[in-house]
Length: 138
Image (cartoon, rainbow, N blue to C red; front, side, top):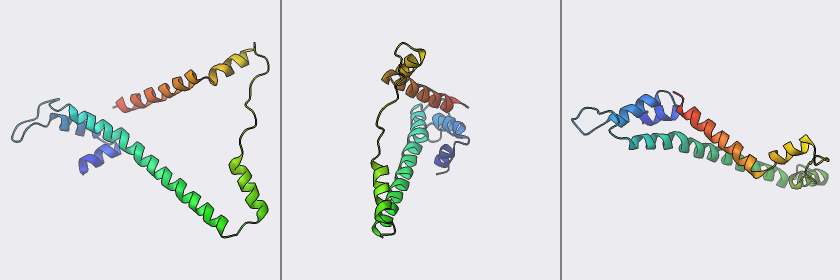
């Protein structure tokens, strides 16, 4: 449990990883990089589990917030006008999307790049590379 706690908190987990990878058989001394598969376990434990726990926590907060809002609506503490305003706000969508008027302008060219799908993938890859770089920081 202390090993998992050290890995989860991020304090000293590289040393724990090295010790786990050097562990050999019973009554045998450590050999460096003897069990490389342990690194996969720690990386998955360090990256995947916090991601899922944060998502579960956020989902729990959202569900609780929605239940409280529905309970407040059912209690009848708000009048008809307030309820219609809330319903309008929940269902509101933008009427149109901004687009520069002049198609040959620099502003339009930048807008065209920013709203493209490849640009979204590029930004996502930058985020992934940033995450990997932060994971490799010792």
